[in-house]
Length: 305
Image (cartoon, rainbow, N blue to C red; front, side, top):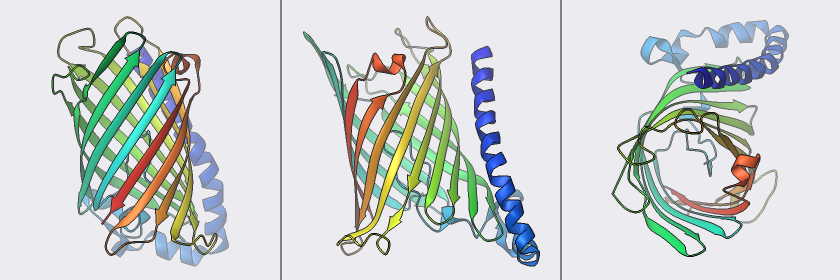
């Protein structure tokens, strides 16, 4: 419980820091055009949903945040399929994960299903099989949009259930309730933050294991008009941070943090289908992560339709 409290405190400090940066800029904007700010911010027609928590002006319901690589997606997806491959190495050990994912939106509710195949190899030993089938859902519950739309934040909740298939790499059920915050700053810069509490159910050495999971995705969208590459609608450099802290068992407090320097390329649509390519380089950011990953390559192919 102490470890969980410390991690929650860290999260609150991060959010406070973002608020300290955003508030002066927003105040300046409102002082510069008080009439516009007042009319836009209190317009009763813009609010809807439970307790009027949502805002029709929010970009969350009108455009897509860039698809992350390592961090779980938190944006609204209407119809999307994707295929990812993650290859990592650490000394004589290597791991390959190939996953297929389907996402379907119903209004602002996004449902997803992910099927991974995992192969882990070390000298003299190979373990492979289908991993947990991951079923998830997410929904926004509060949105804040500044007067001119420069700051656009969406808070939401999500739930993921990992269903074991009793393979060599899938033995325990996993429950992960999450909260997320998707923030757009200006026209091009986005920050997606995700925090979850993972619990493994069932027997074996991992049964009962609890972890605090967190991730952050920084993206900057470069439109075709800014960089006119033939066949490319958007080029999005991405930096990801993905971490987890063990909360119980034999090593409480063990924290592992990975980084991913990546790029997502949104191509021109082919009929109703828009392909989105992605390539990332995965690297450890602390000694605990380095024990499992020295380096990695991640490729991603997304089809939105």
